[in-house]
Image (cartoon, rainbow, N blue to C red; front, side, top):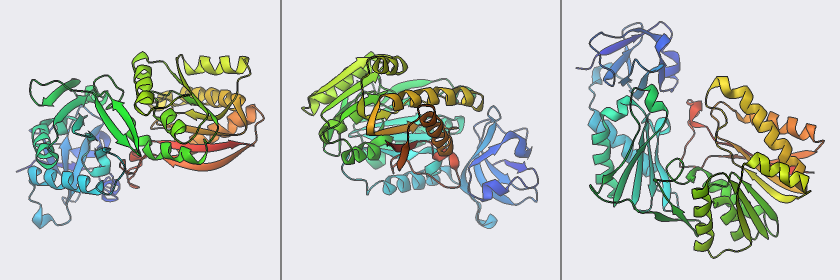
Length: 396
């Protein structure tokens, strides 16, 4: 039998609305015999079982929900069956995604598997486990994934800072085949090829969450001069040239990312590009000083803010970046701007754009709103699943 934790009065409302997190200050009682990582029942203050999840007292998010209980009489819980069902549903949800062999198969809370992320790059699966509860059932997860997908390679890249908060060490290793060597993989996306290095790359190796936003460039870049800031391995630049841009320049601080960006250009037989290693903020100042303008500017920075304490300084950084972008953007040009900072909302981003335009006396039009690709679903009752906010802005 599973142990049962009891909530404080009224604290079940958010869970019953569909959220999957229980915080430490919402819990009335945890049995002393519960071990961190255990799967537990969750009862409201009237002793009614409402959910099942896994426990970790070391985290402020003390319980993460795995399933809801609709009928207490049928509250028998088998983790293997639930894992199999959830993974099958997640894979099925992505079956209609065409024109690519790279996709996110499991997106943590958005697939009701909190603490688990799985990305597929052709014949390679990359698994990220961020929580103790998922770590405890990792062996079962890997077996189900292997049985269902039968990849040639399974690589674990569990290096999130969240693991430290959960009392776990970071870990990175090849799980299948044992004693094998992980190759670089070439993926296909909308008729383009990209080289992916899971071991050396950021996140799991490639920003698949920008797939649909990259494709939108086709409506804007024909015969245009493009600046790709924080370009990483050059995917936006590749798309821009594919859709007829006259020239692209990519800026990034990482030598290895820029080397990969050049290889991606070669893979797709593209010309008229330049990649430069530099701090984007410094490059912006250099462009302004030299009166150098671009018709399209892409701003896809790493997260500036990971905690609420960092939010105000992050906003100042975003404002400086946008002010600089408007100063070097051609009249009638377009700015594609993004934030993947969890606590920077779309409204925050719009306010940043508005303030930055005002400081440069730039008239603007909001042309489009952008978000993460469809294989990174946004569940409306779990706002944390909506993390990538983007806007297309026209300089009038």
